[in-house]
Length: 515
Image (cartoon, rainbow, N blue to C red; front, side, top):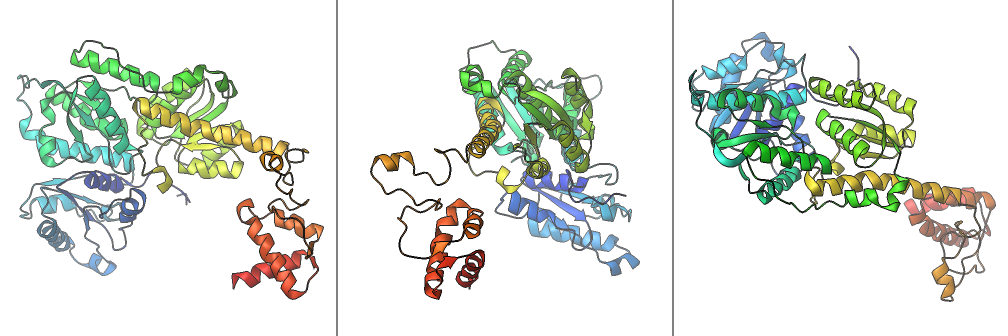
C-alpha cells in the first residue's frame, strides 16, 4: 500500500454522491462509519451549492460492529424517507462499510420503504470516483426504465424527430453547467430540441422521458458512457459521441448531429476568435511551444487536439488518470508519436514533467502545484480542480464560446511568462529598472523619485537614510505594500531618533506596527 498526499479521484461512493447531488427528487442512503461525511464540503465549498448534498449516512460506530447493523440501516432509510420525501432512494455503502458486507441495498429493498429503492454496487477497492458516477447514473436509468424496455423482437417507438438528450453533466464536473448552456444554445441554433439533460438538474420523471428523444449526446464519456450504451442497446437510440471542445471538434459535433438526426446542413456563424488569432502575426510567439497535458480522458484528448491542430503547439506529453478511458488517450498519444502516461500517481506525473521540461502544462489542480514548484506556466483543464476553477462568471469549455475561454486560459499564462521574462532580463537596464521615473510622469513635470526608492514619488527630505543592506531587504517586500513599509519604517526611525535605517530597524518597525 502506498500513502499518497494527493489523489486524482475519490472512491466510487463520491461518484454516487455527485449523481444524487446533481438530480432533483433523489436521495442517497450511504452505509458509512461515523466521520465519513467529508463529501459535504466538496459541494458547499467547491461547487458552492447553497444546500448540502441529498445524502443520509448510517454513521455506524465501533460499538455497533459487535451487533447486527441491519436494524441501523433500516432505521436510517426510513428516517431519510420521512424527512426528505424523495421520489427515489439510492442505497450504497462507502469503501469502509463495504468490508462489512452488510448489503444495505438488499436490506432496504425488502424493508418496507414507501419509495422505489435502487441499490448501487460500488466495488470500492477496484474502481474510483468517475466510474462510480457513471455506474450510478446507469443503474438509476436502467432501474427506472426497465419496465419500458421493448419486448424481444419488437421495435421501440421512434423518438421525437429533431430531439436529443444530453447525458453526462454532473455536479463537481469541470464547467458542466456552463457547457450545458453553451451546447443547448448551439443545438437550438440548428433547430434541435433538447429533451432531457441528465443527471444535472433532472428528476426521476425526466429520466422516464429519455426514450422520447431521437438520439443521445454522450457529452462526458466518463459519466455518460454506460448509460448511453444501454439506451442504444435497448431503445435503439443512436449516440452522438463527438465531444465539442475546440473549434474543429465543435464543427465536427454539429456535423454529427445533423447526420444522426437527418438535418440539412446550414451556415452557422462562427463565434470563436481562436481561428483568427491563430492566423495572426501575434500568434507566431505561440507556434512550437512545448506543452505537457494531463487530466481526465475527455479533456486531455480534446486539449491535445486543440494544442496540435488549432494552436500549433508541440505536444511533448499526454496522459490521464482515467484508466477506464485509457484506450482513447493511448490512441491520441500514438497519433502524436508519444507514449501515453496512464497513472494516478502524481509523483509519476511530476517526474514526467521534469524530464520533458515543457513551456506550458495543461492539467489538473495537482499539475498546477507541480508547475509552481518547477516554475512552469500552467492552466487547469480538468478535475480535480480548486474553487478558483469554478468561477461565478460564464466560462464554458465547449462550443465556440468555450474555444474563446480555452484560448484565453491557455495563452495568458504564456504571455505573462514572457512579460516576467522580459522584466527580469531588463531589470538593470537604464530605462526599465525599478528606480526610473515613469516616462508619462516625467513628461508632465512630476518630481523624479529618489534613487533607490522604487516606490515613492516624494523627494528625499531631511530624515533617516537607508543602509544599503536594509534597502536590499526592503526590495524583497511585494511592490504593492513596499511603499507603506518604507513610510512606516521611516516614521518609526524618526520617532526613535535613528538616523540610519538598518535591517534590524526594518524588522523592529515591522514588529512595532504589527502589534
